[in-house]
Amino acid sequence: MGGFSTTMFNRQIYLYGTDFAAGCNVGKKAWHFINFFFEGIANGYLPLASYNYGARNFSRLYDALAWNIKAQFGYGITAVGLILLKAETFIGLFTKSPEAIGYGAGYLRAYCWSLMIYSIYYLITASLQAAGMGKQSMLLSISRQGLLLGPMIMILPSLFGSRGIFLAQPVSDWLTVAVGLFLSRGLIREILEGKGKTAEESI
Image 1 (cartoon, rainbow, N blue to C red):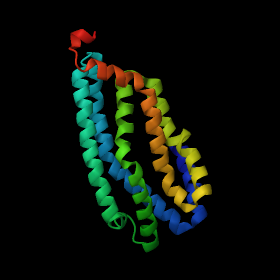
Image 2: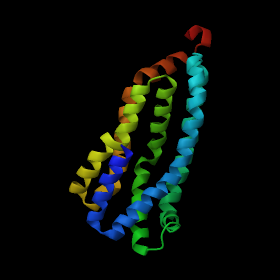
Image 3: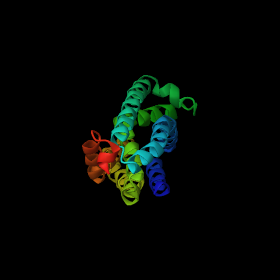
Image 4: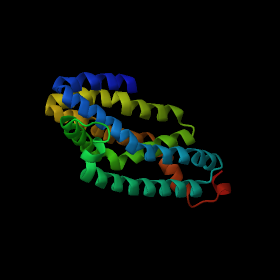
């Protein structure tokens, strides 16, 4: 699904010129570096969550989830501040074209709209995997990179022009988190209800 959405993305951005396309591609690569922290935290959380869910230790699972949310939220605020202030400097590490830097910085700043909730997507995905809910986790993953992002890449530029390209990923991320909260509502309820019990009481 990632390859599918990338193909659609590349087809759309070249409609607005090579400088715009270069800037968007650089901006997209730049936010991958920003996301590494989110991915690393979630990957570290996954085995801990799997063990404690299997042991029915919801108190510890809740504590781990709460710590992850705080850590990622703090990182997200810091990242948003740096992007808003230094987007051109960051994009300039990847290209020297003034036009590409301008478009890339615009793409990166638009991504700030979803940066704060991006961590929720990763934590929900990891929690679903930890609970053995593989189908829900897979659906959430393909929704973000294909089922939701693909249509956004086509629809938003037709409504907002080149600005719609910038907004496609943030809108897709918000919709994905909404889908994730719906899919994990039972798991969230189970964790909240079990966090005040001992592991033996939860069995």
